[in-house]
Length: 142
Length: 295
Image (cartoon, rainbow over all chains, first blue to last red; front, side, top):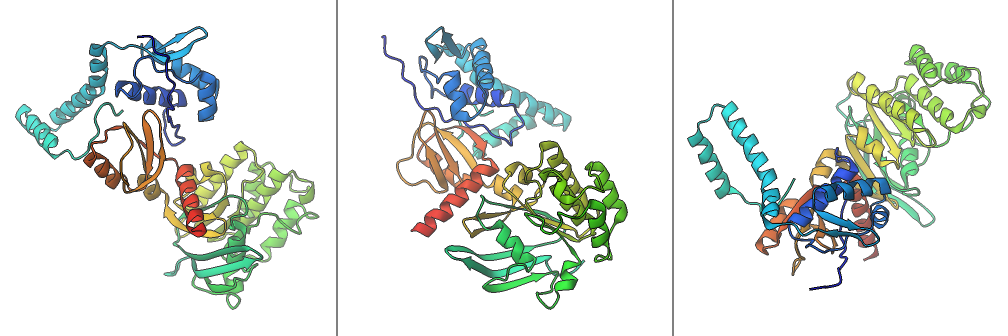
């Protein structure tokens, strides 16, 4: 299929209260949206200049964000064509999605060990948490 | 220290022509920094004028340290350091002459602190006020207010026209003033949100003369969230203040828990959550009040 790439509106948001630098905020949001399937492969991204205009930041910031995402394989940039969301292999998507979860679990297990909990107790906590969880956040939340 | 609030305003109103401030209901407890924020013309200076009895309200009760104007005026003002938006009548006097003049009126005048502030602000004590740059004038007015040894500092845009370095120093001075000893209070007007963010405990919002409450900054910030969701909701979702349709759609909520629950019951997926900046919260509150008035 050779569909014309669409350019959806992507409501990114920069926060002054966020200790992360602005380029990192842009990267993290775009990464989440791509991994959640909100920006499917082939989706056209705004130009670095247009995005800088929308977010009221410098083009150096937006360029840096795009360069980092390109290096990580999330987007592709072609001369004169602008940037589009890259085709990301399903296993890589799945791995990326799991990454923050695995990190969080590792942290949790370490915290449990520090507190002197047994493996059995840790399993119990996870079970309980799964049952009690009342939020519907799926996908990646960093 | 008193058992009274430092400032207590009840149902205070003031109108000029088609501008109306209030009703303002405000109670400020000692030991806090309160930022009064709002765009130009929102009534900030009128509020300060009322607190200093330079402007008499049309109605309502004004009380400072438990006393009222005009009966307790001298007693009240001895405890206040005030920096107006524009310092009037200072032009011909030098910093040292101004200090000498004020020291006769305030038993609590702190000459050591005053000299220290002049030195740190690099203010020439012999130069006439009118010959100083706007920024240095502001710093001098601020130094004068601090050196009177007040319990309450009322500052109407103390950092207007001041460079960022001096701004930081003024904010540090304010913070030191409040935290150095018990029971000291600062109320300052600003339209620079960064200042409210950095040092304020409470934020008072004014929009077009309407008083939008005294908010504890932390509570205000925690009470709002932005959600990115995979699709729009069919019906009304409680708490939603703004919807920006896109991929994904972004919504702003002032009751995040309720909103998340409603989204969940509609099987709408939250792709990401984030905090909402103070600026954004305040602009929503201001817009909402405008809509309410128009309705």
